[in-house]
Image 1 (cartoon, one colour):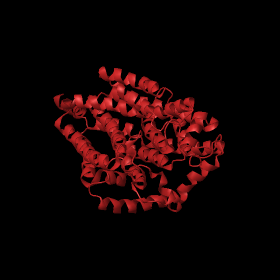
Image 2 (image 1 turned 60 degrees about the vertical axis):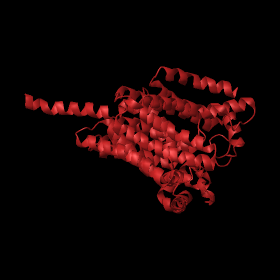
Image 3 (image 1 turned 90 degrees about the vertical axis):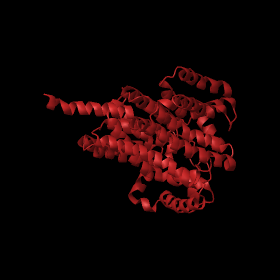
Length: 444
């Protein structure tokens, strides 16, 4: 049954690949978001947990097809974007070689987690500045978030037997709460509450910023996603949303500032009302730690990670390769003997895995994208997509201090906007339009 279901999931992606359809990006997102939930249900139906279920590989296979599309169209990219692609390729190649030697098969899975979002970025650049395609991709991510949230509330109140089966099988009982209604942390269709909350936070940011990125249900979808995030108990997601929402009008010359302020006030009031109705002591206690964050155990643990990560990174100039970090859930136990601990600091996770040279290539590639956007701004190009990229870029740089979100489902929205921001055709077309508008009065 595992292989049959896996083939059913992969088959539509193969069709989209041969048609060279942009809908393959929509499909990648949905497969990434829901494959774990499907796998849990199939395991439960068969009565046995399969740690090597082929269903878990479906996001890697579908993402691999996107990567093949990028390789086939490599010559269509301009030299400036090819340079960005080569920097990412060098960083990943060096880390992969070291990872294969040191970490074995884990390096393959880790490589796929990075290749997938970077391939999405390249496809976004390949879209040629087509804003309709951009809007469809962002809305598709929003719909995936809405469906996952609806299931999340079902999970919160009923504890589906297939989810309970999986929680017991992987030893997460206690860590995710009790297997009782309203007493378990919501992780919906993903493997953990952190990736789920991260995905929801990045999915809802564009919906909060602009009407063009909301689906037909409008603010109802936004409210549903925000309410579900509270049930994950992940405070970083709340910080991510607030920071990006505030940054967008500041970076956009103050545009829509009043609307954003009103929105935040309404959101705060709504959250307070919602928590009162929910009557969840665990949620309230978790949010109350904001008032004294320096005394929080998680905060102290992350400070310890930073010190350990810096020392370890300096001792490993070649890095430990892909597949050597990411199990940061053990940090709060006080055990800091391996790369597992580094996962709760994205910067050190990347340096730890990629080494000095690989990390330089990786971060320099992002700098080149940022430099292109700044050059566009100086040439008079400012639009919602570019300003959204800047808000997500700065927000992501801050959030990276508490986790490597670049290699997870959270990154899809960011990399789509990154691809469009680095798209030279869009920049050229927009600058021509701006120049034509400036020339009209003189011609008259």
